[in-house]
Image (cartoon, rainbow, N blue to C red; front, side):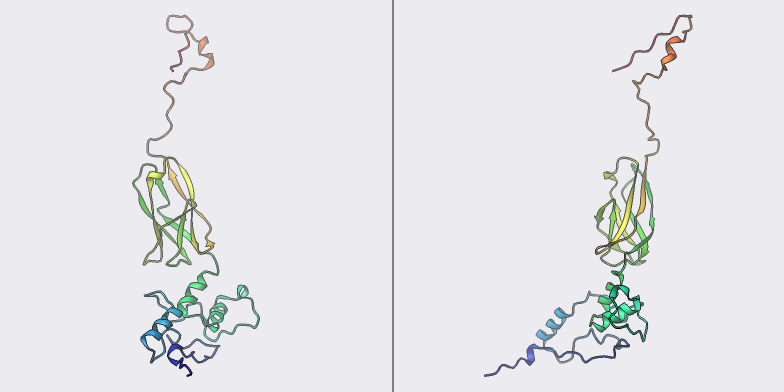
Length: 226
C-alpha cells in the first residue's frame, strides 16, 4: 500500500522576480493550511529571532539591483550582496545580520574613557557602527558580558578590584571573527598616589661628607636604616 507523504512535506514557495524583493513577509510566514506538526517543522527549518524586525528589506538594499553574473561575493557592493543573499533564499532577518558580518564593526568612542585606581566599579558604553545583539566587547583582550542598548551603544561592567596601577588597555568590539580597531581605555593613578621616597633612603649626596655641621666639624654621614 503506497504511503501518502503529503502531510509530511511543505510545498515550496513559487519563484519570485529576482530583480526585486517580494512584498513584506512573503518569505517569513508559514504557508496556510499546515497542521501543527507541519508548522512546527516549518519554524524549525526557517528559524528567526523572536522580536526581530525580519519582515522588511535591509536598508542596504536598492530596488532593482542586478548582481553581475559570476561576481565573487567579496567583490559585491552591499546592495548587490543583499540581493544575492535574497536570490539564494535567505530571509530578511538573516540578511540583516549577514550584511554586518562583511566587515568589522567600528568603535568611535568610549564613555567614560578613563578611571582612577580606587574608583568604584562602573559600566562603560561603547559607541560606533556595525553593532549586533550578539556583539561582544573585548576589554584588555578579554571577552566581556555585553548588552546592546536601545540607543545603539554596547555596554559592559568594569570591575575595579582587578586594577591596581596606572595602565592603558585596548577596547574592541567583536562580531563573530571580525574585530574592530582598538581604542584605549586609561587607568590613572589614584589621587595623591604619587610614589613616595623610601623613608630609609639616604637623602645625602656623595659630597655631603665634605660639608661642615654647625660647629665647624665635618658632618657625619647618616646611617642607613634597615
